[in-house]
Length: 325
Ligand SMILES: [Mn+2]
Image 1: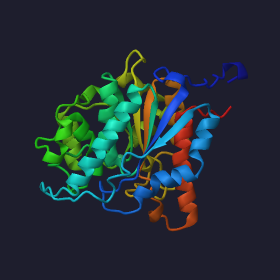
Image 2 (image 1 turned 180 degrees about the horizontal axis):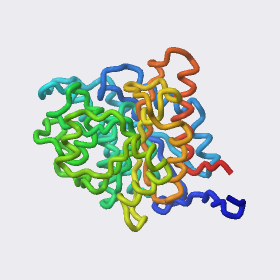
Image 3 (image 1 turned 30 degrees about the horizontal axis):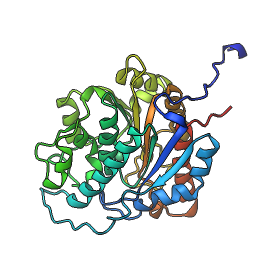
């Protein structure tokens, strides 16, 4: 290859965002799973200097915390099978839904910092309310598409995609806020990075004919670059639809991101994880990004905390316009 064949990395322009404005939506929430500490994610990411870095990339920012009033105050009284914390997850995801809806309606970029992945029930439905043709890119070691009837753990952080697609046969009363909302269609989702899919989830994916499921096998087989292009094509043939990226840091190998609740070996390299975010920025179609499942309490030493939090910040910076050159 000669130098003149090198493609220049394009400086991102965000087609759907007016005035380079973004809202950092703190979602310090952990009731979608059983390990305490993941609610500290937003503050750790912000303490690392994320807002300063994003402002240096040209963004005007504001920080909001829709959960400030309710954290710890919701009593979990509703029961359905083995599902944990129905009331608090329903209450928090509704607040996140409203904030993401209003943020995107304003033409601002919604950067939501989790928290566990259950918060994506709110981010997906909120972005979908503003953008009916939204495509969802789910970056994760897991498919998170268990229904309330297939989940073995009963943890709702393994169920957000099923909620957003309206796949639950029974919707417990606290979640009635989402009944009237537009749901995500099966051809508007693509997965990248999967390597630990429950048997029940395999069934759900097959029954619903969800085909854009790019596992680690596909990344090894075709390379990350091709996988991203295939996923983008699948979501969006003409390349002009808005995209929400829900980025679980456990998609990246625990070698680089050790402090997370459900690590699975054999994941993305850190560079693959960042390249993916850089490429998404380049499409110009990103309207929102979730960074979830950073849990500093699960680190066995300080370096694990630094590695995990700096990886989360780097994904956000790359998706929001940072380029290497
Ligand atoms: Mn996840």
